[in-house]
Amino acid sequence: MSIVLKTENLSKDFGSIRAVDNLSIELNQGSITALLGGNGAGKTTTLSMLLGLLLPSEGKISIFGYDFIKNRYPALKRMNFSSPYVDLPQRLTVRENLTVYAKLYGLKDVRNAVLEMIETFRLEEFADSRLRKLSAGQKTRVSLAKALINHPELLLLDEPTASLDPETVGWIRAFLKEYQEESKGTILLASHDMKEVEQLCENVLLLRRGKLVEEGSPEALLQKYDRKTLEEVFLDVSRGKEE
Image 1 (cartoon, helix red, strand yellow):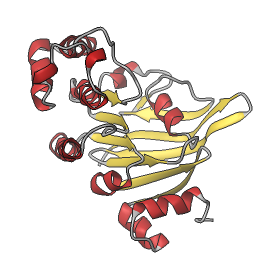
Image 2 (cartoon, one colour):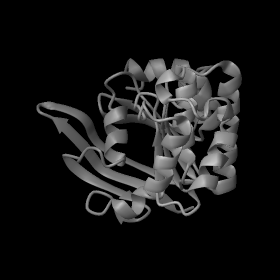
Image 3 (cartoon, helix red, strand yellow):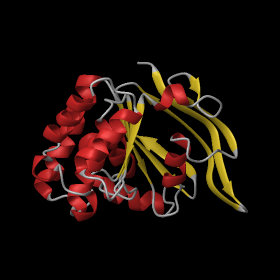
């Protein structure tokens, strides 16, 4: 398997505060990896640097073999991102939002790409409603549709099932797993839902105070910490028990 994403000694300072501290990770093609940590652990800052929204203070980022800091655009068109905490244009309808993003990614058949996402994510009922009129769960589904509009090879997800009902959560998890298996796409998933991580992810990266303090498969971490659930492992690591 080829390496899709690699960071070397990646760090980000905000004044005297080091939000990310010498982070070195690798994501292989076709893998689903969880990025975990408590509030202030550095997850959002890390994702922001991997999207090109923040410049690192130190270190390197390589995505699809490109030096992402110096030449990000060839990689960006092969990536996408979803977060319920990042708003899409609220005055546009669902269909208009997806059309805008399909054009931004340079898709040739915009109309069919939009229709595919509307059908895939079951958005027909409110496809022509303005985004500001939708529920939080409906907006999450639209955000995921936007994230898949260009069939990305690298997908960065921040709390992808937030605000969704249990039935939809199960469907989204199954969809993401199927997408990864069929497309050989690579997914980096930030989540506080440990059940979701256990079901989807083959590797876990645990951050604390900006540092990578633990890494391994869910099964290996459960065995190492002698715990029954990943949530218990998460709490142990958050409290520094791996030391």
